[in-house]
Amino acid sequence: MISSLSGILEASGKDWAVINVSGVGFRTYMPASSPALIGELGQRVRVFTHLHVREDALNLFGFGTAEELSLFETLIDVSGIGPKLGLAMLSAMNAEALASAIISGNTELLSTIPGVGKKTASRIVLELKDKITKSWEAGVLIQVTEANSDILATLTALGYSAGEAAKAIASLEDITGMPLEERIKLALNYFNNK
Image 1 (cartoon, rainbow, N blue to C red):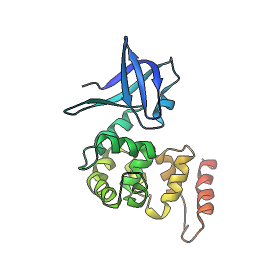
Image 2 (cartoon, helix red, strand yellow; image 1 turned 90 degrees about the vertical axis):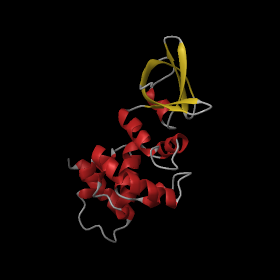
Image 3 (spheres, rainbow, N blue to C red; image 1 turned 90 degrees about the horizontal axis):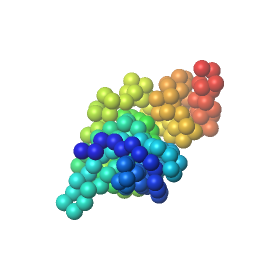
């Protein structure tokens, strides 16, 4: 198995990168945001990898963090989720937001990912909720419900980790019936008061 690559970033595209390791270029398929995040062309980079062996191909999937790799490998253990769909899921949202959606049972958010329908989203939650809870910041993330998943999505889009966003959401008091904009402002105040 190839568990990681460390070398020079030779080329990259929307969802792939070529990493030159001692004169050998390894093409790795990556979540859409990863090629830009791992570094500039010509720079030394390191990616964590999963080698997927099929009858007709050997595909290498690369990730910027060990957590992303772990989540990817957990996702592809679900029946009906192959590496391409797992990669699409990690391209649609960052690993923390995806883990949070699974832990909180937010099938609506999961089904917005291209290729993931309601049944697949339900199966993912059913099969992975307990597995992911053990390996992520579960104590706080469980408090994120479908009612406030919009706040979670907004805060993670602004660059906060899912754990930070979940703590901000947990600090909110009586937000029932409040407009989304107000709930987001209150959640952002959590970071200002830290």
